[in-house]
Length: 146
Figure 1 (cartoon, rainbow, N blue to C red):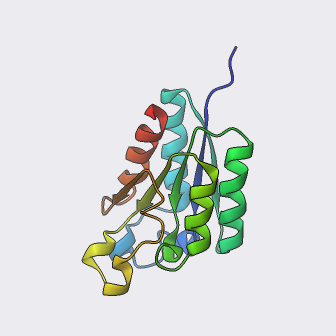
Figure 2 (figure 1 turned 30 degrees about the vertical axis):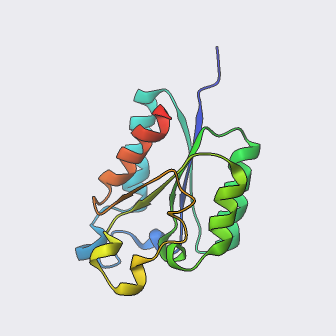
């Protein structure tokens, strides 16, 4: 039996506080709630997930590189605040040559002006923003089909 395709789901800073942090912006779902729904959907799609969160930029870069080395099919990435600051994450995405789908719970373009610039978007295959936790599920559906 063939090994199911692997998709990494990487979450950046402060996403460990989902459900507590500004629920009017980010919703009431916790990261565990999102992961549980993603795992159920992954089973339906016949893919496996490696879901991680870190508040440290270097961990996200390491995990992006690891995704390629482990033969992942795609990466779903919510870079959190690093979206607007991280050339290192941009460069890591370009280096791994895997489709990366950028996800944001809120719509950065409807928020503060500093959030409207993404260093990740130019390197990502696509971006899903402003749909809350549903954005992760849509990204998983897309990643499984790429």
